[in-house]
Image 1 (spheres, helix red, strand yellow):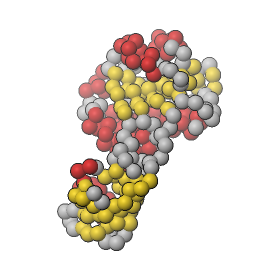
Image 2 (cartoon, rainbow, N blue to C red):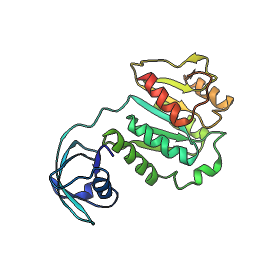
Image 3 (cartoon, rainbow, N blue to C red):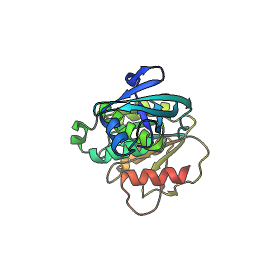
Image 4 (tube, helix red, strand yellow):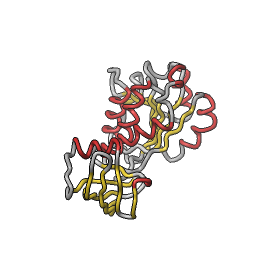
Length: 235
């Protein structure tokens, strides 16, 4: 982890924290930090700074911290993601968060297997864990807002209209008639389909709401690979 994330419960005093579990093991075994060493830290939902290791044993570590810098700015991008396979979902959320995406809407579509929604990975607890992994990687502290929409039609009818205002609307699909744009200077609403893509009827629905269907080319990419390519191209 490139940033040690601190929870509110970690603070024993305003500028002192006690860490155990996964973070203790990482600091001890990966950073190999010793008392007196400084590490990059950040409070979830707050600022970034430095932490000085004061002491640790097999059970816990104590650190004095100074938090005095703002986290990185978010990407001006809201992501609509058709639910992928659960293992892919984990990687995609962590990657999206590491790139600065703070709004993610996970939706259903015709090609999404119904069993995916029953996976324990499709839960706010797991989303939080994957988000923390992404924040640790990127050096960020702000958790994303991740929403689930189990039915496509109610999402389109009730939620999507409020997301459209003042955003460029793009749907990524290899069949797109337009080349995916580069260096966009305005907020973007991006839709990415499931394995096999959105069906024609779903694509038509997005078009009716002002989406441009755009392509990166004829190659079929994994969801997390496509997302990274798209973000790099847009911003």
